[in-house]
Image (tube, rainbow, N blue to C red):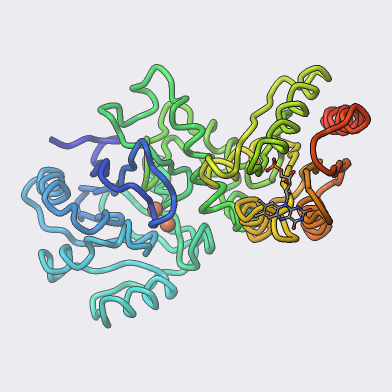
Length: 393
Ligand SMILES: Cc1cc2nc3c(=O)[nH]c(=O)nc-3n(C[C@H](O)[C@H](O)[C@H](O)COP(=O)(O)O)c2cc1C
Ligand SMILES: [Fe+2]
Ligand SMILES: [Fe+2]
């Protein structure tokens, strides 16, 4: 069985429902797919491979797609091991193969697999003719590794986009957006993938967009998740929005609480936000929800309200972890409110304020309180919620 994206372009895909943590860090409750593509023209080319250990499924699909021919080229758009894992097997099976990549590809390649003689080192904009099809290479460094590139099939206007436009979630029978009633289940996961793995390099994503401006794209073939063939413009728009760091109207309330005081304040603020007309509110306990979901939601919405109890003169460790990650990722353009509770000299709110300064986010207001909120303090929380709601206008 083989699946054609369009004439002579075959999708080869392997689902991973076993792995708990992608990159040993990101929970993948819906699994993930590793995709690669085989072009069977006068010459044949494999674009990337799959995760190591998928050989049986991978080889069976490749044999079918090759239909008795030998493999002429291996084009490497991305060297991360979830895609380069089967390279050694491919080299062993097809010893005459020519490997195609850019100079940075081969630096990484040779560090893992040794020097290779049969290679073509391409530069940005170079082309490779396979017969009917001519492939054009577009260097997209740091989306999200230094060697990352995309390959464009001029003949069918198909963009092989590497990790860009990829998402967590296995391919459950429907491989193409046009085969599904809705792609909704992939959208949140695409943003979680983007914000956590690619988001730090958003400026490089914008540079990639600039390079692709005006290029006709009929199909987007990423290394994870569905192929976007019905409406590729939709995922291009999503990526454009996320990499510009534009938030949607809505608020993420994330809190750290041991004994419930800060949690109570969080629910109170969330309710007040709704009373002030905010229609998209997500409240998270940072001790319960994996940080990747927090980051994804903060990437989605324009305003964030962070709350932490005081903990050993600082913030609660899970909140500290979240603020450190946000700093590391460099997300911009968010409106921020802060709150928390303490028993003696505080620490939660004080340290959140330090984060606020270094983040460059628009500071809307903060409320710190000893113990439980008094009526007066509740009024301060009302004012904070109103200010956050107003900041969306
Ligand atoms: C392990 C631990 C460390 C704490 N450290 C501080 C602190 O450094 N400064 C402070 O004012 N209160 C400190 N507190 C008190 C809590 O911040 C305070 O009880 C607060 O109201 C707890 O909020 P919560 O109910 O949301 O957990 C600490 C409490 C615990 C259990
Ligand atoms: Fe990657
Ligand atoms: Fe990947």
